[in-house]
Length: 171
Image 1 (cartoon, rainbow, N blue to C red):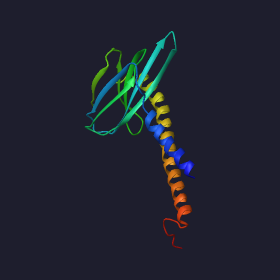
Image 2: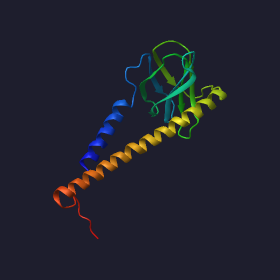
Image 3: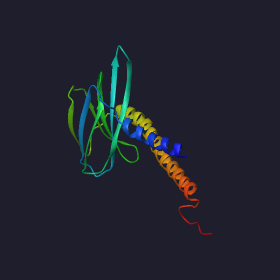
Image 4: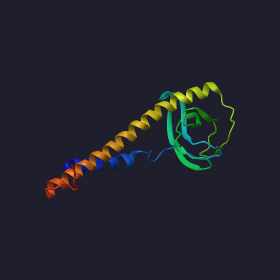
């Protein structure tokens, strides 16, 4: 059981260490401010098309941004042709989509109401961010399950060491 607790803590430690990219070769720093009255989920979608690894995209989830709050995040932009900054509402509608083709490494963006959004790009963004949302949910579930299992193992260890349960069950 001690081995199980050790492995559980090791898994949590490795998750927190490698949850974000380390040492990106071409990071893009984004500061974004939500000037709407909605809680928005913020994403960056980087697209690439080149000879050495073909075409594709990667979605980076930042956070749920409260109204009138700011967030700062970064993502890898190595070899991309363009990237999009996307904000989704609680009911998964695209509320903000900014297509960026500049080669800068720092962006300060403000999300305001009534953005004109290209509906074809919004549909692509919706599909790509949906996959990322599912992965985030699975990751959160696995993380919480790991915490619960570690707690149960620790409770079992307390019972084995002392011969008593750490709490009394009335019944």
